[in-house]
Amino acid sequence: MRQVYLDYAATTPTHPDVVKEMLPYFTESFGNPSSIHACGQANRKAVEKARASLAHLLGASEEEIVFTSGGTEADNYAIKGVAFAQKHRGNHIITTAIEHHAVLDTCHFLETMGFKTTILPVDRYGMVDPDNVRRAITPKTILISVMMANNEIGTLQLIADIGRIAKEKDIYFHTDAVQTVGHLPINVNSLGVDLLSLSAHKFYGPKGIGALYVRKGIKLVPLIHGGGQERHRRAGTENVPGIVGMGKAAEIAEKEMEEEEIRLTRLRDKLIAGLTERIHNIQLNGHPRKRLPNNVNVSIAFIEGEAICLSLDMEGIYASTGSACSSGSLEPSHVIMALKPPPEMMRSSMRFSLGKWTTAEDIDYVLEVLPRIVQKLRAMSPLTKKR
Ligand code: PLP
Image 1 (cartoon, protein in one colour):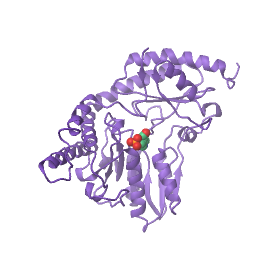
Image 2 (tube, rainbow, N blue to C red):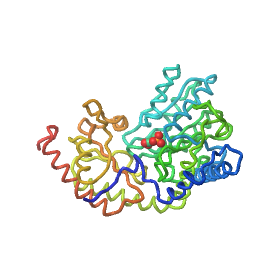
Image 3 (spheres, protein in one colour):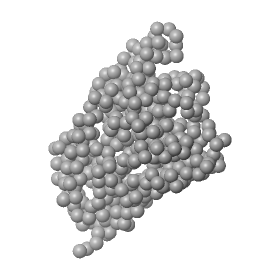
Image 4 (spheres, helix red, strand yellow):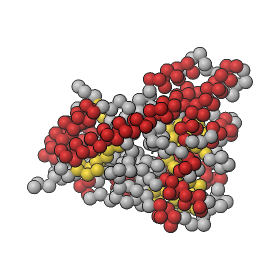
């Protein structure tokens, strides 16, 4: 059976060149970068080379990169780090309804400690209005956290506009760029962001490694205490193979990004056009143009995303749904709910995320299989309106 992986937003395969680069650091080059002997110092050099590659990808300087265990830790560190360091200035954080749980749950945790959060709504395309950000600012606001691209619906936010507002009001601005780094050009200075989260496994690097960009001069309270690694910002012996792999992934991304963006946008639009042509009562979620080049998210009325996902799985197509099956009931995704969909569209979202190894033939296969599945599921669904 043909196998088509369309879940690159969940995770990407590690690029073979990245694996090759990492391998020696498990065996022959195993020293602790904090050791002063040659064996340790060789690895210190490798860690710093990777830091430089990552900084270059973001238009940042090397000392502004702090390695973390991934995107979740980077988000936690940015938000808790600012909240604890700035609590003498205020206790108010502004974020949005469509953030990843790594941001939303961190804000909810901080609420139990006396912080207050304003959660901004989005429009029907999942866009945050920068004027709403401005209006939500109070004298107690210490942080604005708005994601660069949404992981479910792919909508890209007006980050530079929000960055300008944050700068004007002298408030720190964090963006979760986990889905954007390595896929679209980013420059932290032209965007005006102070803190930016990223994760290697979303751009063909290994899992369990990421980073937080921290603008020079910003003091964060660390999440993890112990040794003095990462200039006392993140204790613990560095994950050298992971860091080396992420550095290599950043180098590859920088070389291939431009062409890949054009290629994926073409495939993305082919899939969107093909699905809307072949399936009635289908709706594209997210912004039609301001979206990630690899993201297609559709709601298919009257059937559940979970059922579509499982049927696709049986045909060798690996995608994902916005609904999570928990305790027997299908909880609609908070991102889809923020778009205020009609009831028949709430639990029916499907995300197809494309990547480096997606081909036009893969898209043709989905366009052949999915309409058939939808027809079958709709015929069985008690929700289908008989016309
Ligand atoms: N933020 C966003 C937008 C994500 O898509 C993800 C992963 O799905 C994360 C944060 C968490 O990243 P990690 O898996 O590296 O912890």
